[in-house]
Every structure is written in C-alpha cells, then in structure tokens.
Image (cartoon, rainbow over all chains, first blue to last red):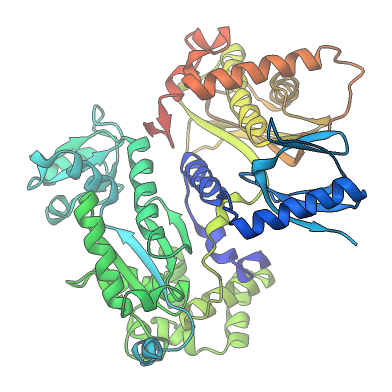
Length: 108
Length: 430
C-alpha cells in the first residue's frame, strides 16, 4: 500500500496496460538502448596500437574497451598474439576482433 | 537566458505533459477507413451480438448520446445508422507505438500510461521548441497529419496536475491544450465537484459527500491529519495511506518521475485468466482449459527467464448473483516453468477445491518468481532436460508463426480454447 506514495507508485499501480503492449514497449526500449560503434580517429588508433604493442612486447597488463551492441564490454589481460591478417588479437587465450576496439589503457 | 524568460512566468521546475488520444480505437479506424469520416462510428466488442459492448465511440457517435462501455443494442437504439467495427487490438498497439516514437522525437522521457495516454517530460528539450504551448501544438499537428488522430495535452509541473489538466480542461476546450499552474488551483480545479478528481469513483464520491467534502477544494483544504481521522472513522485504521493519496492529488502534490523504463520491472507474478464461452461442468473439460492456461503462463515465464514457486488456480461460477468457485494456491517442491510440472500442481488444486458446480472463468498464475539460469536438479523427473528442450523448440515455433501453429492434442477437442484465444488480445480480436 505504502508504495502508492513513493517513487512512481501512484502511476504504476493505477495504469491499465495490455501485456502485448508492454512487450512492444520493452522491445522498442531495448532497440533504443543498442549502442552505436565508436569511430576512432587516427590519433586514437595510434594510441591503441601503441598500447597493444606495449602489452604484447613488455607483458604489460592492458584494459581494452570493446564494442558490444548491448553491454559494456571490457577485456583486461596481457595481449598474447596479434593476427594482422585476420584482424584479431588474443588475450589470455581468447581471440577478439581488432575492429571492435574502442579504447585502450595500459594498467600500471 | 532566453529560455528562462519564456518559462519564467509559470512555476519553476519540471514541465510535464499528459498527451491523450481522442476516442483512440475509433480514431484509428476512421483513419483506416476515410469513407466513414463523417459517419457515427463505434468499435464494439462483438458486433454479431447485440449484447457486445462499446469499446470506443467517435465524437459524432457521442453526439447521438452513445457512450463507451454501454451495450451495442442500447447504442443502436439511440443511433440506428451507427457504423460498427470489430476491434483490431494489434493495430491499436502498433499505432500507439508509432505515437510513442513521435513523442520520443521531442523528448527521450516518455512513459506510456495506457494505450492512448502517455506522459512526456519536456523540461530538458523545451528550449529547442519555444513555449510549452507551442511545443504541444507542434506535436498535436504532427500526429494529426501523420496518423489522423487528435491529441489533447494537459501541461503542468508534475504528472498528477498534467493528468488533471488533460481530463478536466484540455479534453473540453477548443485547442485541446491546457496549462494548469499550481498557483491557479483555487480558481480552477478546487471549484470542481470531488467526483471529478483523479482516482475518485462514484463510491468514493458518495463517501466524500457524506463527509461534507463536496468539492476538490474542500478536500484539499482539510488538514491531512483531520482527513486521516475522518477516513479512519469510515474505513478503519488502514485508510491512512489512501487519505494521504487523495489529499496529495487534491493539492496537486506529486514528485513521481516520468520513467521510460517503467514497464521493464520484474513482475510479481505471471498469470492468465479466461472467461469461457459457456459453462464447463465436466472435469475433463476444465482440465483442458487449465492445461492451456498453464501452457501460456509457463511460456511467458520461459520467455522472460523466470521460474515460479507458487501456483494459484482460480475458478469462478457462472452465476454472478450467487458467486461460487475458489481461488487457492500451493507451493511446488521446486520453482519451475515446465508446463507439465506446473500443470500437475494446478490439477491437484482443482481436484482438491472444485465443488463440481459449473465454471465460467478459469485462471492460473505463477508467483514467487526467480530467474531460471539456475535450477534444482530433480531426482524424480529424469526427463526434465528433454522436456525443457522440447518446450524451447515449441516456444520458438510459436514466437515465429503464432500461438495456434502448435498446440497440445487436447486443445482440438471441443473444450479447447487455445486456437480461439490465440486470435485475441485482451479478450478482443487482434
């Protein structure tokens, strides 16, 4: 009962929504939340390339932000291999596409 | 700075709109059928039956005295030339979503409140468009032009005042737009009879009148503590919250946000209920419907990734004057969303509580929900993995091709309702 007086309670307890309408709203909201790819400029790419190389050659831990349509995706670890031909890199035994990288930081 | 000057005259803070579509279902049908533009039109539950009810009436039909929720036969008596249209619920949902998208092109804070009413918080984007009234007019013109639907706007500093402004003023004035400033309440809202207030129905109106609170203003000016005492005398000591709710509504106090993600909250329970086309008196027949409902409930739970621990079953008799039937629940051994497991529990409840009298309405629901990424391995059901794989496959087929494409064999017996039900939304045809 108390909920009616808090937050959005008055409106959530009094509305009339068809379940099918709610589903449509939630699907639409999910589409709106889809993330767009971040386009990196030349300078940012250079920074990413330098960080990845540093991690690969000096066994430094790196934190990479990757594109994912829904989630916030971060890969943390040491770059083991870089496969320029297939456009991918390996961190802790797992391959990731180089094109998905949105940012990189070498962890101290 | 220019922005602040423009909105500076009204009260500071948020600017909320409640946008409402006039005779929504009827307007959608008129836009779809331009040939009926100047004729009285209604959307009615079941046009073949005179006892079907009016879901929506266009303004022309209303001018003949036709009202929403009355029986079709009564409307025809008032207006014999009425154009009667079967509801198409899926279309109305689609159009409502198109309207949501139009609102979202003006502000990202849009909260659908029902199929034809949505809240908009335009505080942050108003400076792009001018005054609140200009913005409302812009949206109104766009929806009229693109979809042929007339929208009305109540505008105020919070949701309750926006809703009130729309219901009591915007729906009645020529422009369809009304701004209700909080300072203006004594001269406007407070002069109205208490029955015009949001959340006050005919019964509550009688109660307030008996307390001497005939107008919204009288209710608003009663000190909250006094109102609580007055309501306690009538409704017992649990009425404090309602007293505060009515008091806040009367005074236009509401700090609820316009919350776009509001429909994503985890449900308390997932349930389905069905009114049967005729009385079911045989156990086998009731069991068929029970299985169909259980399947629907479990299907929805699986789709959302929930399992339920408590099963409830309700049956209601046909005679509304002498109510019969039951509504009981039981806890299963483990949470589940497997149809057969939940059905076993539902049948157990039915066998235990059904008194053998004819049944007209059946409902099944699952509550105490938990997520289904972890579940208890069962010693007693070695086929669980297999059943779950089967259900995943049938659910996928249904999602892609419709609920009626794959049903249980009992659903094609005369008692089965699944095929029929899959054609409907909210009890009306898609």
